[in-house]
Each structure stands twice: as structure tokens, then as C-alpha cells.
Length: 252
Image 1 (cartoon, rainbow, N blue to C red):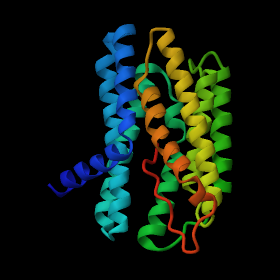
Image 2: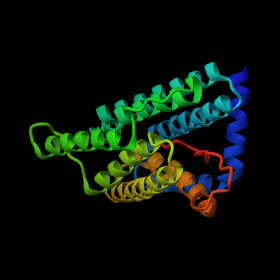
Image 3: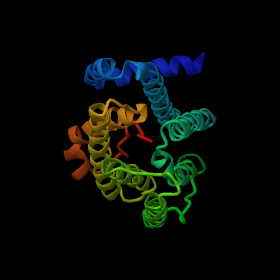
């Protein structure tokens, strides 16, 4: 019951700030209805579950800030399971596995932030440098697989832009102790993620095909990008006693 109340509270808070995203979402659903109505139910389910997972991330931040560590960990695990399930499903059904590729970096970043926020100890081996190196290794592996016709894995130009953003955002989440660098990486990542996802969504619609995650990876990171844009001056010139800027959504 407590979890449901917290969920409703976070949805209301998100909706007050990001009411405009619902307008864009329903407009895109209308377009999908016209070009590929058979895919509409699965798109609605996938984007809705992605939204639920992001709300769990917001609930996690709130729980940690209120020193409810067990509750925060529960929300974090729930969001991770939903995200991973959606990516595996999309990989199996649509043969697009690039969404799942950055999960090792996201998991390590989550462990690091949990250690810092809850255990009050750092996991120094996880830094933006080591996570950037890990990301490069995974991307090179993806590149090798995509150039091998026997694997059946193809990654389009728009998906490469999107993938770059997804990896960079994971690297940003693993960056601690330097909020300025963290914000710069996050903003760069969000621009790539939103641009790549918008490009991919447009290309898919033109070809009468749609992938639910492409739509949600466009809309939900867009809300975080707008948050950063609105708070740009405070991020670049933080007050004397800066508070870590909450990401309204983790955009996993």
C-alpha cells in the first residue's frame, strides 16, 4: 500500500512538470494507429512498463533521501528487472539487442551509487574512466558482431547514435565527485539518445514498422534533457553549498 501511494505521488510530480510529454506521446500513438495499428497494443505495453520502471527510479531517489534504504533498494531492483525484461523481449522479438548492451555499465553504476548513498563507502574501481573503457570494449564487440553476416545482428546509423547516448549516460551515472563533468556527460548522452531515438522512430514509421523501446527512449530521456536545460545556469554555476541535481528519470 505504501509503495502504491509513493508511486501515485511520483506520477503526479512527474506529470506536473512534464505534462507536455503526454501530448507528444498520444500524437505518436495516433500516427502508429494509422501506419501500423497491429503494433499499437505492444507499443503501449512496452512504453507504459518503461514509464513504470522510471517512476521506480524516482521512488528510489526519494526513499534514499528520506533514509529509507531498504525501500530504496527494493525500488531499484524492481526498476532494473523491468528494464532488463523489456530489453530482452525487444531483442528476441525485434532482433535489436543494442538496448541491452550497456546494462553491465548500468549495473556497475547502480552498485557504486548504492554503496555511496547507503553504505557510505565508494567503489573506486568504478569510475568514468573504467566505465568508458568498458563501454568502448562492448561497442567494439558489437561492431564486430554487426559486420559479421552470420550473427544476424545489424545496427543502423540511428541505432549507433542512440547506443552512444545510452552508454554515455551509464558512464555519467558512474561519475561521482565531479558534478560538472557528470552533468556534461549526461547532457551529451541525452542529446545523442534523444536524437538517435527520434531518428530511429521516424525511420521505423516511414517503413511502417515501430519498436516500443525506440519511442520510450525518445520521450523519457527528453524529459531529463528538458530538466537539464531549465536548470543549466545552476548546473554550470552551482551555489556555494550545491546539492546533487536529481535526475528526474534515469533513462535506462
